[in-house]
Length: 277
Length: 228
Image (cartoon, rainbow over the protein chains, first blue to last red):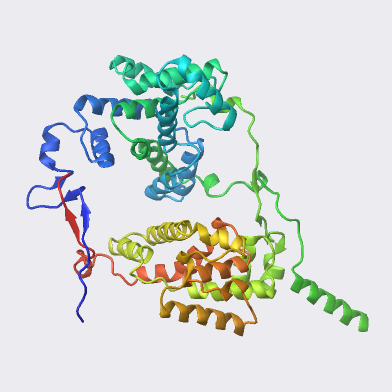
């Protein structure tokens, strides 16, 4: 049987070659020679263009500053639950699976970037005065601002850490970081929610030239160590209490005990038979 | 060394986790129905699966519609990404849990994409008086014939799904039948699409021998690399 040709899929990612493999236009040995970091590889994977070594350090800063790997945090707890049967990667995969388009976690950094961009466009200039009116509208019309809200504590220590790193690298005067600071000041002036590391990471990544979607993917990639650490320890521990909670710690709140229609018919028949006897 | 309390310790959290579907314990219940003393005696597994998804014991018509639709949805061939990906995972020598995980994730992604591509379908099912969007109508004789077989299979079980009076595509007709069975929310429909196809996807995967890389068509489809 003659087979119709299958249209090839074009890719810029990689090509296996004799002796030297290519990755986004680079010979892999060249990447090694230019001391590409893991953060640099992640950035290259996400947008297909390399960062300078200085820019890679900024991505490193974001990755380190955003680290919050407490196993009680919801997506990380999920990784622990799946890893509790003794395998690491299912826990890692399950943790990552819950992130795309989720309400919390690093994927939301992309939405924070969208918000910062749309607000800046509406304000026209990156000043607190210019941002007050659009922020007022924002606070009045939305329940949740991506990149804002700091649960259980007054301020986000991760944002503060990132801010210090950004200032140390003299990137705090770049357009998006400056706009973010004005945005935060306007939200505070209007007694809105506290900013978290999401808005800071979004601003730093916008200044590196990433799009919102790329920021969501990159931030999720950078958060992998948080999941990997929990999945690795969880798979070693195999905690029985994660495999099954104690009975007295589970409360059923669903439908009360009841009989199916067919069981009711059967019970009625049995009653009739008993009465006939 | 134990660290001092942090922000999580400062909050008064619930002490128990709530369950909404399964009553745990030695005599388990599903949505309040005794599994071992009632459901297992009076209902088939497909009925119980539908009960779990919709929260109530299905009527005979709903159960039959679900059964027929799930059977029509069961064959997902190796050409489709879920079976292809699951087969690749088995080829790579993944443990069975890995194969199952790949199959389930890919099947769920496929279900999400299918329903996401057809927002008009859910609108149509919610408002039966609306005219049928062209994207939801059958486009070939084969499709018309398949939908006719669906109508006949349902009729043999004494079921008439009014939405099938329209010239729907096979996919739309099957979703309409699931909708008739009580699966009205996208998450419920996605769950049914996954459950229907998973056995075939996993079985297909396990026919691909771990490590038999030379027998796998590595150039199907071809990829063409270009420097950015």
